[in-house]
Length: 70
Length: 501
Image (cartoon, rainbow over all chains, first blue to last red; front, side, top):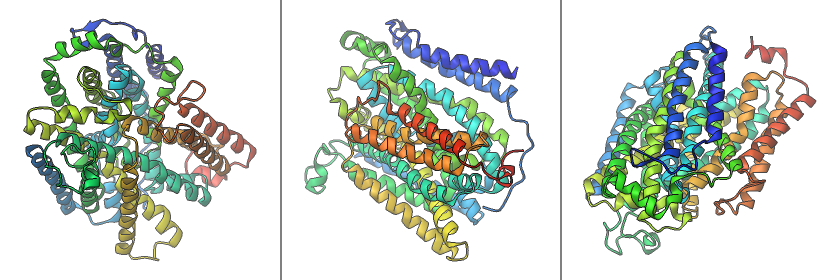
């Protein structure tokens, strides 16, 4: 699952860089340009993927002791 | 005048919060600088988001969208949603572990300890301070422009000295406004320390997110509604609604800019305040959505403004202040102005506090010893240092171009140039002190060369080899770090044992 999560994150970057609908003049709900909706969707997708990272790829080492050595 | 009164009332509330948090202080230096590592997920999310979203996110994004259109969101907002959380995960959690284990308060303590090098610390202090100055400059410019734009027409000619009234349009002169905002932030940072800053950040982040959304709908209504606002752009500037004119190499190189968050000294300090490793989970997940909530309305407002304002590209920092100031509802304009100032102040406070911490820990205590000065004397020196940096930045703001976005990109380019060093320090055992020093020097030399070539940020379309300067700066710093590290002796096993199992 850990590998799947990192592949998803990689795909997210690829989809971001492809910038697929950057020339579309379609308006979503009559006021939102499609290129903007595309990237807003990526923001939501990023939150979902990062949730999966915290769920399946979170560091499991023990919490360190607090030092006072400054 | 109503607008100004509301802004002053908001500043009084923020001051009260900072002073009030002082009553809960444990009275220790650790509490002042790191809130005794007691910050939970919600406060960490608000602190990190409030700190990373400054005038750049509100004033800068609106101004840049006015010039370039909706493509700005893809260049920086959606990429930041991916990359900022990556920095929190790859660096934040790791550095929190090191900081907790070895008792660090500042970035420089970590780098000095990790590479067993005093020279690296001596080099990094002026470099980091020099990079924080343009970041402060963005906030100071944004605050001044916003308050000036929102109060336009309030004062009769002759209210302020003549040299201040140039281009003030009867509003609070931007230099006076930015000085007043700095003063408010200095007072609550000096009184409340990190705890006060975290509280003020939480309040101000909620304020600017809420008022940002309100601003969006109010300005949309002023344009005749959401559909009418966009329809006017379709008629007059349809090119602003697509993003296919951005060169692909420039678009790709923007992906590196958000890596800068991994080297912001004030973000490092916020990471260290976390109560536990799991505290990072909420900020990592929620950060992309929070960016969406702030950036999407700002980008649309900037695009809509193309049908109403006629500003030269180099004055794009005035777009949002002029739209807010142009509303025929002074109470609302006051609240919206307070929202923008909240975003600015929630970054300035962390930066001020961080500068003081760095000066105290990395200069005074490290080089003069912990017994040389009394605690009150040390704090006084730190405060004088912060005030000195703020005054220098304010003076620079008198001459800086009014392009918040472009100044921000140059500032972030420098921090991104240091990102390879942070990543290597966390994960690459073979990194050496000489390699780290070479990397910092390569970053500084490349950044300075390109900054001068861009006419000191006045050339807003500057690129190098068809890409943003950040690519050249980061590649040069990485190559120098790897080559010199491989050519020099690795750190001792004793040093490595403190960081790697």
